[in-house]
Length: 230
Ligand SMILES: CC(C)(COP(=O)(O)OP(=O)(O)OC[C@H]1O[C@@H](n2cnc3c(N)ncnc32)[C@H](O)[C@@H]1OP(=O)(O)O)[C@@H](O)C(=O)NCCC(=O)NCCS
Image (cartoon, rainbow, N blue to C red; front, side, top):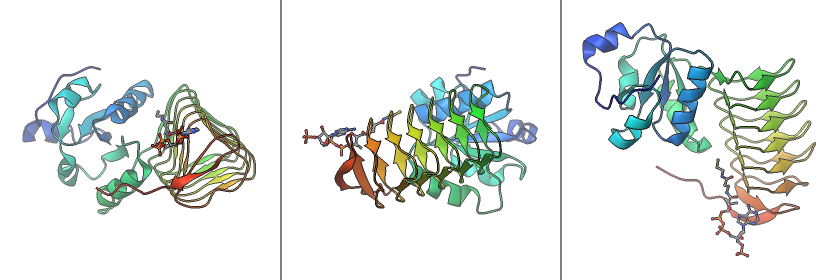
């Protein structure tokens, strides 16, 4: 489905759509990918929510419905998924979107693989080529990017982000809101602290403290990781 809808839908149309199941919060490229995964997964999508940016809205593979407040009046059964790449931003959005008991839905690309006894927290999104092997646990709103892999018994905390081609090996733990950047590898039995950023292409062979950026092979601390505040 492609649309160039860039103005809020009239109230009557909104009511007619109320039984559809899911909206994407966000309008950026990340949100566009999440909407595309919903489409690929055959998941009915009401549309996307976010600030009125016509150029972004015109490129969405789903209707732009309005800003985030649209969700406040949506039918209680409408679920949300967050199309924002930054984990801390996802945490803030989740707090607001779920405060009235609204459920977050998960999306798994049909080109992703989920093995035995894997658990996906609400709001998790798996991109094409993502692989969870076996006994993997994902927290809330974890995003597993294109071709990223998570091996046996690994635990990925709430709002963590695994960018394309990253690898988390067996029994490792990724803390809440941490990011494993493109092509990085976390070897087995490693702990990545909450809010940490593992730089692109890094190979992590020692535990990483909270809120630092590590880079290189083997990965070493580059600087503190100051989180964005919006
Ligand atoms: C790790 C990262 C966050 C650091 O960003 P930053 O703090 O702005 O770092 P800078 O670009 O200022 O670089 C600082 C130093 O670290 C080095 N560096 C930065 N990223 C590096 C990386 N991934 N691996 C090795 N060295 C790296 C730079 O070469 C520079 O070294 P120098 O001072 O000797 O020249 C960033 O480089 C990164 O890897 N981001 C992930 C991007 C990604 O995966 N995007 C995918 C989107 S789908």
